Length: 314
Image 1 (cartoon, rainbow, N blue to C red):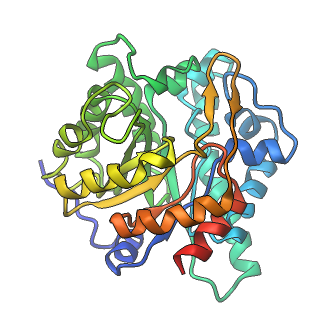
Image 2: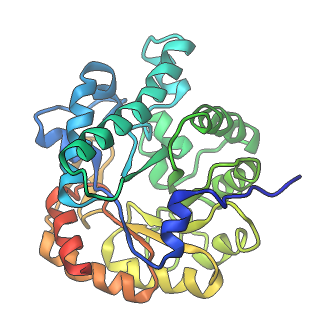
């Protein structure tokens, strides 16, 4: 099998320049701030279906805050999950593809208002298998299914989004070694670069209990993904996790976008706790010092957090 070549990748050239790439924050909390109730199995994908303009506006909030890369709303929008809600397969695929189109539209509108700015990137979100189940299982990864089930699921998602103009795949919140190895197999066939970010339960283990070093070592000799990291994880664990990844895979870029440190109740779909944007900004300098190349926020991290990170990393 020929190894993929990313020599013409604008996002990879950006990272090779040594600059930090600033991501966006959580889409769901921004949509809630815009007045939407997301307490349903589709989460932010519900708005993708009902009010696509609101998705564009959410992306614009992050771009105006300083994000240089926006992540599409395809995390929860799986083909299988959308079919369960009553869409046919064609409608489901079109809706997922629209998540990229809407992100691109936000970028276009941002560039009209900011013609001297560097053009932001678009990352196509690939959520974990558990996200399609809408039962909170992406937070532990104990799906109880064979590899073949995961391969079938992710092959459809990746194959669909591979045909878009998104700059990179964002394989997010991956909770287990099993799912990571499935993605390793599928990404090896792709010409679009990718990152894989894991969800971790502490400063050394994935959510399924796998030591982070054991997991990322599996990717050390792979051309794709080009970056490894952590998201949707308490920010207090970031520095140690970055250091462990950096030592194990020194040639990979490192991506981190933690949640706010609040605790999510998967049963009631509610958050508990508080977090300060200023604390987030201060912490981001430590992530950069530890070796992070791509930085942003996940659940409960809003535009104000991105502003704080941007100011801190200057």
